[in-house]
Length: 138
Image 1 (tube, rainbow, N blue to C red):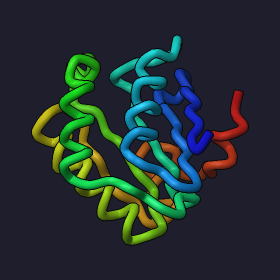
Image 2 (image 1 turned 180 degrees about the vertical axis):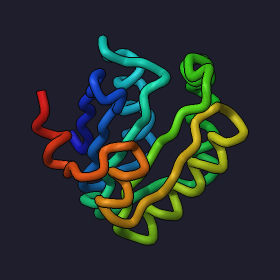
Image 3 (image 1 turned 60 degrees about the vertical axis):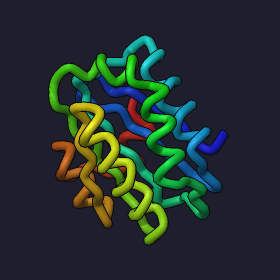
Image 4 (image 1 turned 30 degrees about the vertical axis):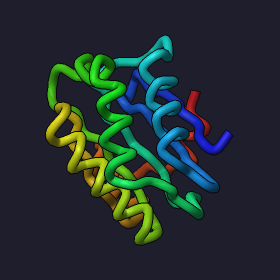
């Protein structure tokens, strides 16, 4: 599997990690898995570590199509929620921006892109922690 999801109810954060080759189908499945998790809460901040993504295969059209398919799920996000995405490649940055543009018009999810771990953690209110802390926390 090229992704993992861990929800931290105590921190009100959903922590996603993607690696390897990622495409729209994988992103779609990760979102569906997330909203079906027992601890899912649409008001939790989402934090995504995409630094280990080596290839992203997605077009604007594919992103729009998948967002349209999950509109019912997106309606659960009834208050503005932040999604911070940590990227290390230009391709991942561009895809995150495309997704942000689509979600901006279709939902209350706002994507913020970070270039380093410290910045990403500060944006979600976890300054002083590490991604390893989140990955290994109970």
